[in-house]
Image 1 (cartoon, rainbow, N blue to C red):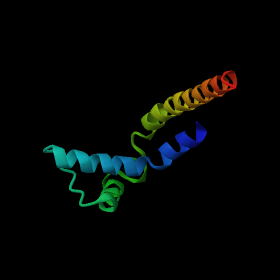
Image 2: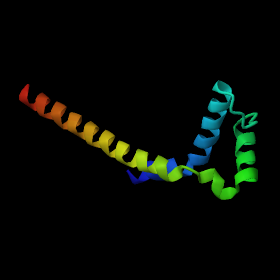
Image 3: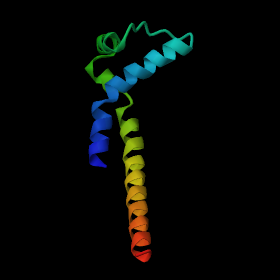
Image 4: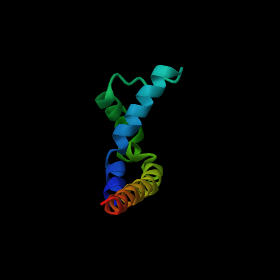
Length: 89
């Protein structure tokens, strides 16, 4: 869970630039990004270095419980299958 949260925080600038590229292609909202690196540069230029991590807290808040559910589900299914295999022996 900690690794997923760290990865979500670290990659947050890339996710923001990707999302803005997607939005500008599907709506009238134009950020003027040509590609990912250009978008990251414009965000840093217009919104500052901390602007790159806007929304990172929300992203981490979503990823942490999501990862916990995935790990618990995986372990539960693995345990169920192991017990089922032992019964069939």
